[in-house]
Image (cartoon, rainbow, N blue to C red; front, side, top):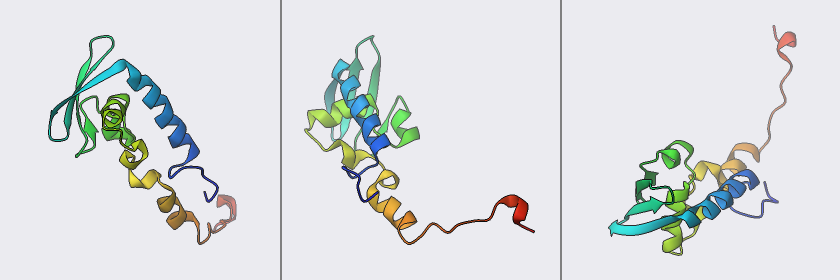
Length: 112
């Protein structure tokens, strides 16, 4: 974890980069405050709320990683996409969980 190049793990970072590329097919339009109406190639239209970190497609709500619609809205703000990823994917959370020591365990057949 200490060698991570970004504030999130490599898999989450790769997922986010993929979603950022997919967001090129989305057109965000500010609807007010932190809400965006996002239209995508193919005719889909969703509502993104950056303050609540949610999208009507529900992908962001489920994964806690911004979906392509949210990435489009964040990109319009020239924002930092990683800052919108949930804290439990970030290096600090992993360091708190695993830094002290991951204690070894005996296999189940040896437990009595």
